[in-house]
Image (tube, rainbow, N blue to C red; front, side):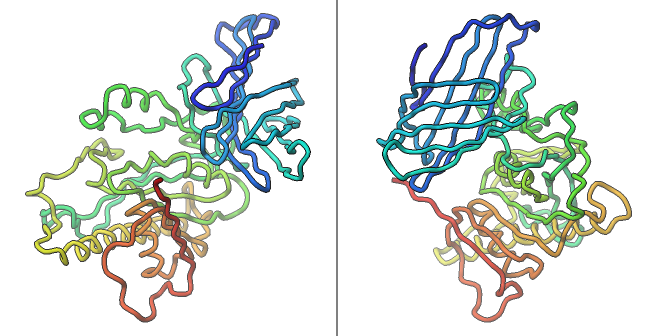
Length: 398
C-alpha cells in the first residue's frame, strides 16, 4: 500500500493482485460527485483502474474548491461497500457508503464531534481508459442522460450591429442541451466540434486536447419521455468566450430536467464555425459596427447597447424555441414548457440575462454570474419583468 499526494489532492493508491482481464484495454471505473456536512463541502472522485493483474484505486478531494493535502487511511472497498478515514480542515472524518448500480451514496462523520453529512458519486461513462484525458469533465449530477443539438438561426428582421454592412442580419449558433432517453451505444459528442477554427488563437496542445475531449451529451437522442414538458433556460457566455466552454454547467442543468439553449454570439470569441461550415472571426476595427467612444461618457452608453443586443438574442432564441414547440413534429414539438422560462449567463452574458428579464415578460427569472454593473441605469418606472426574480452572483480575487 502506498500513500501519496498529487496536485494538492489526497490520493490513495492500492496495488492488488487480481485475475487477469480478458481484454487488452484497461478497465476504468470512474465516479465523481460531492460531499457536504454542516460546516464544509467539496468535490470528490473515486477511480478504480484494472489493467491485467493490477488494480489501482484512487480517491481525490477538493474541499470548498480549495486543494487540500489530505491523508487517507483504512480504505476498505468491495463491489458494493466502501469505508475510509481522511482529514479535512483539521478534522478527521470517517466515510461509509454503499453502491447501487451506477451510484455510490453514503455518510460521513467527524471523530468525536457533531459534524455529519452525506456524499454521493455518479459513474462516468468511460469507453476507453487508455485514451481518456487526464482530467475528464465532471459527470452531470441529475437523473437524466443528456442530449445536444446545434441550430443555425437568422433573425431576418434585426440588423447585425457588430458589422458595418447594412444588409447584415443577426445570425446565431445555438447549442441546445436537453434531458434525453438513455442510449449508451450512441457515441459521446465532441466537447468542442469547432476547435480547429481556434488554432490561430490557441496553442496546438490545447486545441488537440479539446479535439480529443468528449462531452457527456450525445447527439441524435430522443427527448426523455417524462414529464410531458420541460422548462427552458437560455444562456449567454462571457465576452470573448466560447459557449461550449461552459458544457459542464449546461449538461448538469439538462440532467436535472431543463432544456438549455446556449448562444454562441457571433464576433465574440476569436473565431466560430456554423453548422453549415461558414467560419467567422473577430473584425478589424475598420469593419466593426459599434462606434468608437470619443469621451469617457460614451463608453457606458455603447456598452449598454452591446448588452441589449445580446438580450435581444435571448428573446429571439425563445421565439424560435416556441416555434419548435408549436410545430406538428420534431424533437421539441409540444415538449417545451414555454410558460416557465429563465435566463442566465456569465459576465456580459449575465448582464444580458438580467436585462432580458426586465424587457421580456416571458422570462420569469434570471441569474447574472459575475457580470459587472456597467452601462447606465435603466429608467425608473415599471418594466415588463419587474415582478420576476433576478439574482446576481459575484466572486472576488484575494
